[in-house]
Image (cartoon, rainbow, N blue to C red):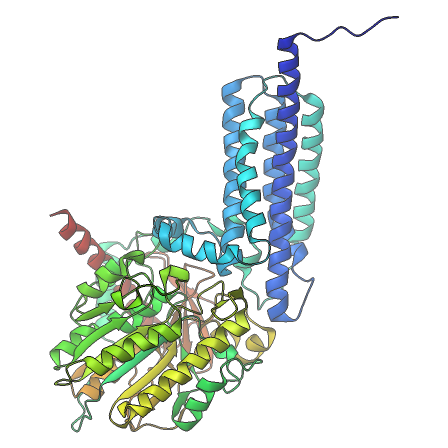
Length: 607
């Protein structure tokens, strides 16, 4: 009877190494497949909910990611054939980088309904505390800790994949065939066109999303001189209110508050009944728009009066690009004898918000580190919930020196993704926004009881539309404008129409406040003034798109025109608006001025 020879210790080690490598290579391929299937499921779940078309988006998302899976399978085939440790290590590192990028993209999409952008990594990557606060909140969602365990397991795969150097031709052939099949499938699925009212960026794979941005291309000196000449020809209107009321003003900037949540504004749901009731009893806008797609965009628009659009030469703008006291909201307040204050329950260190607020001149800045919040439960961005936040402001209001009027901006956080309900501690978008709406009602009533609304003005607006896909009804009713629609409600001592039908935007706040303060203010034809009995609408409304960072939308009358940011080759997409040449020049000059401001701040910091 013959017995198999007992393998030597080195041979056993080689076999274990071969087994470990085989498991790791298959594990990497399966992990990628699970990530891509998970993204397809998530895209369909989210987009399908808002479009009423469940099952419509699995194939397009899988088709977009199939190119990545084909590439990863090809890399694994080369790893299985490779005899050289260094080459194998480089191939595994490249495959793992692709896997890590896909995983990060899925996490960000799960948290924020946004895609992973390289520019965002540079902008938000260093904000560890804030990022963890949002991620930690998501861990309380179903499967949250299981996702974390999967991420940790993923880190072990590239280590195991590199332990053996012996070629595995059979495995390489299998991976090669699968790569070819995946590429063919991607090509076939690519022929299908996703439904047009869905952000295409939600369907595209993460590498396509991060193709080079044309917005970074610079302007030539000659081109910019021409643009400045054209922009200078845009009509200006200088005005002053001869009989100003000079009220104190509170501006509540509500995180992710959107028109689609309001039944009054035509929403399919009724998540803001308290705000709608306040609107009916006071003043509201049927067509009010956010200039940007993030909170920082709203902060730039109302704090500096500038458009939150990308300057040339950078992947993402920063607050430094809008750091100028002259023309800012607190600058206007100071020049007219007003006190200015900015309150938020969140971390003012995030993106250097606090530093920027000081640069543009706010007298009082209160954030998450306010001693008033000591011992309170914390949420995203180390914030307290809205009810506690409003109490903090009311305490300030009750104890401030009333010798001069004030303008205050209140930025809420409770409805920041992933939409945690502070009462149930669960991720629940509807209950989260109903809670926020309820607290707006409580705050409004507290101001009424104090008599503030007898002489002051309360303005409530959304900072940006939720970072969620459009509902089919939204697109049918409002088209591309639906990406920017947010509620705008005014209550208190102000003479203006009960319902404002004309289109306004966040940058119109400064000219409107100047009118109320009795300050002379010069505005272009592209700026509006709404806090008056005869609101003066801007000729156009501008919205910086979140799905295409190279595009700005111009709303004029009932039309929407896209403008591509591309240096000297910046141009209109499709039908251009009336006065297109001057509008383009106005935008280009603002971008150039933002770049110059950012450069001045950097140079000042080096001195």
